[in-house]
Amino acid sequence: MTDFIKAHTMYNFEDYKWNLNPCLIKLMCADNTHIHYLSEKQAQRKNATVINNAEDLLNDLGGGIDFSQFKK
Image 1 (cartoon, one colour):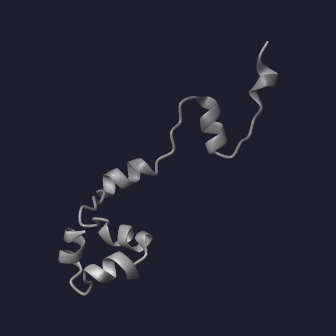
Image 2: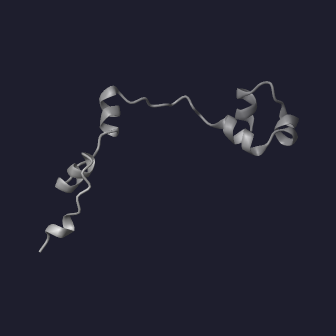
Image 3: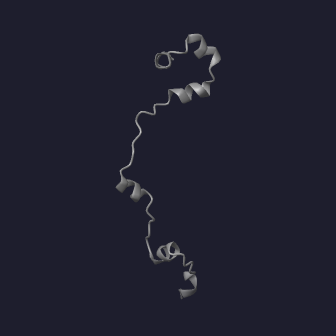
């Protein structure tokens, strides 16, 4: 509570106890200063499609082939 009142000096102890919604207090206490931005290379890797086999490749290219008919 004291950290909240130090950070938000427009509120006093009575406002904190009686006038503020607990959800709003939680939202205002969230620390958004440690945001980690991805480099361009990391962002490209995150958005990359993972292809493990030929079926994934054909599905990625738009050829929805049913491979069950080729199995013996």
